Image (cartoon, rainbow, N blue to C red; front, side, top):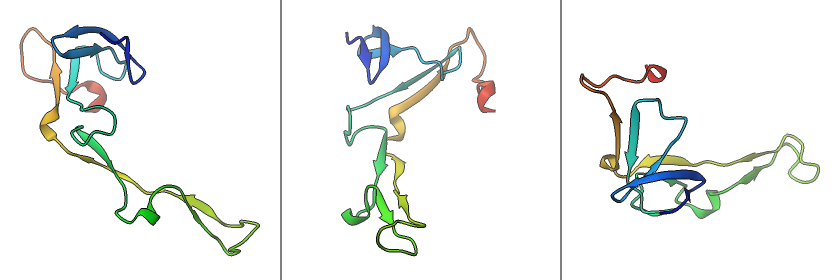
Length: 107
Protein backbone atom coordinates (compact mmCIF):
# COMPACT_ATOMS: atom_id res chain seq x y z
CA UNK A 1 0.00 0.00 0.00
CA UNK A 2 1.45 3.42 -0.91
CA UNK A 3 1.99 5.90 1.94
CA UNK A 4 0.91 8.87 -0.18
CA UNK A 5 -0.91 9.54 -3.44
CA UNK A 6 -0.30 12.95 -5.06
CA UNK A 7 0.68 14.39 -1.68
CA UNK A 8 -2.35 12.95 0.17
CA UNK A 9 -1.71 10.49 3.01
CA UNK A 10 -3.23 7.04 2.48
CA UNK A 11 -4.71 5.82 5.79
CA UNK A 12 -5.98 2.45 4.61
CA UNK A 13 -7.36 0.28 1.87
CA UNK A 14 -10.70 -1.39 1.11
CA UNK A 15 -10.22 -3.87 -1.71
CA UNK A 16 -8.75 -1.90 -4.59
CA UNK A 17 -9.85 1.42 -3.04
CA UNK A 18 -7.25 3.59 -1.32
CA UNK A 19 -8.63 5.49 1.68
CA UNK A 20 -7.51 9.09 2.13
CA UNK A 21 -8.73 11.50 4.80
CA UNK A 22 -9.23 15.03 3.50
CA UNK A 23 -10.42 18.08 5.46
CA UNK A 24 -12.41 19.39 2.47
CA UNK A 25 -14.85 16.49 2.73
CA UNK A 26 -17.49 17.12 5.44
CA UNK A 27 -17.76 14.72 8.38
CA UNK A 28 -20.14 11.86 7.58
CA UNK A 29 -19.55 11.95 3.80
CA UNK A 30 -17.35 9.97 1.44
CA UNK A 31 -16.22 10.72 -2.09
CA UNK A 32 -15.04 7.99 -4.41
CA UNK A 33 -13.67 8.28 -7.91
CA UNK A 34 -11.86 6.19 -10.47
CA UNK A 35 -8.58 7.36 -11.98
CA UNK A 36 -6.23 6.06 -14.60
CA UNK A 37 -3.24 7.99 -13.24
CA UNK A 38 -1.66 11.31 -14.03
CA UNK A 39 -2.66 12.75 -17.45
CA UNK A 40 -4.60 9.59 -18.36
CA UNK A 41 -7.49 10.02 -20.82
CA UNK A 42 -9.70 7.79 -18.64
CA UNK A 43 -9.65 10.20 -15.66
CA UNK A 44 -13.04 11.64 -14.63
CA UNK A 45 -12.01 15.26 -15.30
CA UNK A 46 -9.55 16.45 -17.92
CA UNK A 47 -7.86 19.74 -18.81
CA UNK A 48 -8.69 21.19 -22.21
CA UNK A 49 -6.42 23.50 -24.16
CA UNK A 50 -6.81 25.22 -27.50
CA UNK A 51 -6.51 23.01 -30.59
CA UNK A 52 -4.03 25.48 -32.13
CA UNK A 53 -0.64 24.82 -30.45
CA UNK A 54 0.44 28.49 -30.78
CA UNK A 55 -2.49 29.50 -28.51
CA UNK A 56 -1.51 27.16 -25.64
CA UNK A 57 0.57 27.98 -22.60
CA UNK A 58 1.57 31.37 -21.24
CA UNK A 59 1.47 34.04 -23.98
CA UNK A 60 2.71 37.62 -23.83
CA UNK A 61 0.09 40.12 -25.02
CA UNK A 62 1.97 43.26 -26.00
CA UNK A 63 0.74 46.70 -25.03
CA UNK A 64 1.23 50.11 -26.71
CA UNK A 65 4.97 49.53 -27.07
CA UNK A 66 5.54 46.24 -28.90
CA UNK A 67 9.19 46.14 -27.79
CA UNK A 68 11.11 46.86 -24.59
CA UNK A 69 10.00 48.33 -22.19
CA UNK A 70 6.89 46.21 -21.92
CA UNK A 71 4.44 48.93 -20.93
CA UNK A 72 0.78 47.89 -20.64
CA UNK A 73 1.71 44.32 -21.58
CA UNK A 74 0.38 41.28 -19.77
CA UNK A 75 0.51 37.52 -19.84
CA UNK A 76 -2.50 35.43 -20.83
CA UNK A 77 -3.27 31.73 -20.54
CA UNK A 78 -6.51 30.03 -21.40
CA UNK A 79 -7.63 26.53 -20.52
CA UNK A 80 -10.68 24.74 -19.26
CA UNK A 81 -11.78 21.51 -17.68
CA UNK A 82 -14.25 18.96 -18.86
CA UNK A 83 -15.93 15.93 -17.37
CA UNK A 84 -14.97 12.82 -19.33
CA UNK A 85 -16.68 10.04 -17.38
CA UNK A 86 -19.71 11.10 -15.35
CA UNK A 87 -20.03 7.66 -13.79
CA UNK A 88 -16.46 7.68 -12.46
CA UNK A 89 -17.31 9.52 -9.24
CA UNK A 90 -19.69 9.11 -6.33
CA UNK A 91 -20.62 11.04 -3.17
CA UNK A 92 -22.07 9.08 -0.27
CA UNK A 93 -23.46 10.12 3.10
CA UNK A 94 -22.78 7.68 5.93
CA UNK A 95 -25.79 7.57 8.30
CA UNK A 96 -27.80 5.01 10.24
CA UNK A 97 -30.97 5.72 8.20
CA UNK A 98 -32.77 8.40 6.22
CA UNK A 99 -32.52 10.17 2.88
CA UNK A 100 -29.44 11.89 1.50
CA UNK A 101 -28.85 15.38 2.91
CA UNK A 102 -26.69 17.98 1.16
CA UNK A 103 -23.78 19.07 3.43
CA UNK A 104 -24.52 22.43 5.11
CA UNK A 105 -21.45 24.04 3.50
CA UNK A 106 -22.89 23.37 0.01
CA UNK A 107 -26.54 24.38 0.46
